[in-house]
Length: 283
Image (cartoon, rainbow, N blue to C red):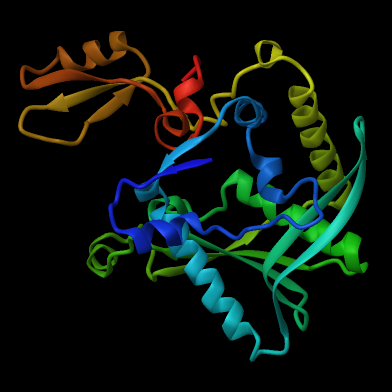
């Protein structure tokens, strides 16, 4: 990966460049299993390019994990940043999956995963689908490695943009800057099947020409569909959103001070969160 210094302050750039993450002896990790197969194939074909300024949030996350790891040394019931391994049979041979657990409470048999994220990402009060998969793979790895099966999974979301004033104004806004979100447990069979299907798909993509690979799905690129907003003059928020211009126009024509505004759909991951998007014809 090429990291471009668009900040101009060398120590900050070096801190961002000095990513010491190592997957150990694993062929796959929970994060790599969650990665879109087409993106993974693209990264095998092209060199990725990122601006240093776009990795600041990743640096914050690394800092938080490091400080918690140091603090966990003084709490005997917690194991921090240990990697657990499990091997699974696939169409492409046996593959080793390794999961590095943020915090594992051996007294309560509970796994905690820390996310430095936005307040918006937890507004629904439920974990994202990739978080659910990630933590269940962690649980599977602990079981495969130790024979022990963790009884609970929890996301600990640290909200980097949390506002105390917004929490006072908006009842739907997170009450605290740290939010704990329970993650539903999969059966070990479901987790094994998910891991195997992801590895088979990724390995198949890696073994064939890029032109034979299907592009990322709408879900994988966090696609937002085009909407037509019925607006009222002088207001910034839509009265109602429609999936087509016909219904929106019918709503708006009943009153003279209403109009329709088209809100173009977008592929969010492609536009801002994919390091090989400049090479992709589907973005």
